[in-house]
Amino acid sequence: MIILRTRSEALAWRAELDRGRFEDRPRVALVPTMGSFHEGHLDLMREGRRRVGEDGVVAISIFVNPTQFGPGEDLDQYPRDEAGDLAKAGRAEVDVAFCPTDPNEMYAGSRTWVEVEGLDQYLCGRSRPDHFRGVCTVVTKLWGLLRPDVGIFGEKDYQQLAILRRLHADLNLCGEVLGMPITREADGLAMSSRNANLDPAARDVALNLSRLLAELRRRFVGGERRASALLEGAAAILAPARIDYAELVDADALSPIEVIERPALAAVAAFVPSRAGGEVRLIDNTVLRP
Ligand code: AMP
Image (cartoon, rainbow, N blue to C red; front, side):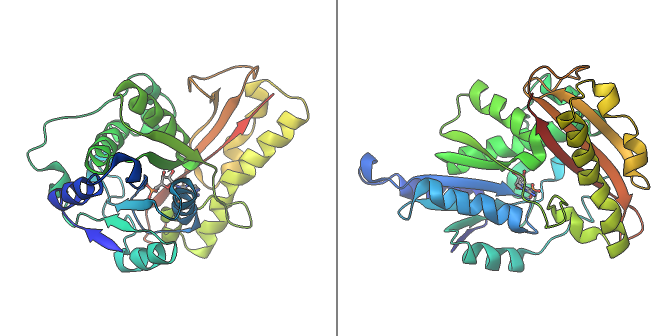
């Protein structure tokens, strides 16, 4: 696997791919990540391989992007394991990893921010102001460096994916954006790097997020379409996890809905006690289709 550490190394590597005849150029899949890999990340990488084929290039980035963390959030506690990640990526047949060691590598002298208006005012955007601005900015930078034919993202971060699709269309970026379903543990817990910061008791509490979504789906399948009735008792189902939000929103516009008449996103965010003594914020979601 090729490891790229700096922007100039990444640009030089990408320029080299463009040498030769256009028809022969390998296709590039990019999976941007913050590392600390679980099967969900590896599923995106394997999908990358399926998309570009044996002759294509699967690239990942590993960068814990400081600009998407707010003051008091878990930037310092975010799990990091570069050596383990590179070993896992190697087994998933990743060809190239862009791993800037220094945040300055991405931001030194930078004065440009990328912001998608509107879609960031709901759900996580409300509790994490500037989060999506940080995500959009770093993804745009990565896109410019590595110019993928396909960039692959998880529906685990549903709002992020919706925002990045808009960004990609609005800025006429190359290639396409591909979303992939949520990878879960056998008991339903959505895989997340932050699960590493849960002790066994907290992991049990974390299950309440997927339990809540299963309960919403049960009510929905039973014919209930009113958001208020679907969400009744949500905080109690999540407890002792502390609710940030549990909402039903339009699956495209992300705006709150009162009655489900077209595909709706049931989305939840909650804080569970962490191993280190503070709290870990976890998210999960599911789409309900009438
Ligand atoms: P992260 O490292 O958490 O920034 O995630 C990198 C990419 O992996 C993002 O596109 C996430 O949406 C995706 N991802 C994270 N967890 C999962 C999961 N459980 N299933 C599918 N994709 C995921």
